Length: 104
Image 1 (cartoon, rainbow, N blue to C red):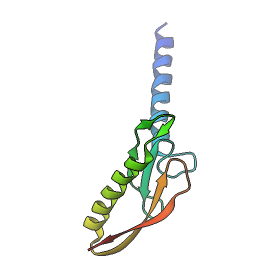
Image 2 (cartoon, one colour):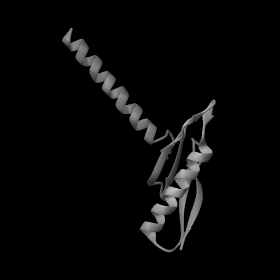
Image 3 (cartoon, rainbow, N blue to C red):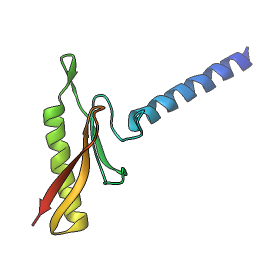
Image 4 (cartoon, rainbow, N blue to C red):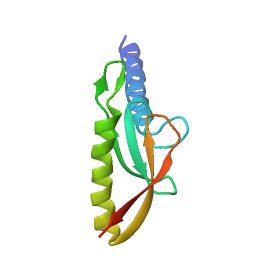
């Protein structure tokens, strides 16, 4: 009986761990996924990721994306200084697109 309980706890731990991992890396290897917005370096390295609140049958990608883009601008300007800096931006499980920020 103790072995069965132990096995069940191990299986539960693996399921929870896999679910947490799957939330951070989508099936295509990019950060983000359903219900999320993400910003990445041009090489695909994750910079920042946000989970968007549910809105009806979808998610509020508009306000969530605005918050992420504002945070990215602040972070990239602080790290890289003046100039234009490019990054990849992804909404849900769509293909990432190239975006940029201009820092003064």
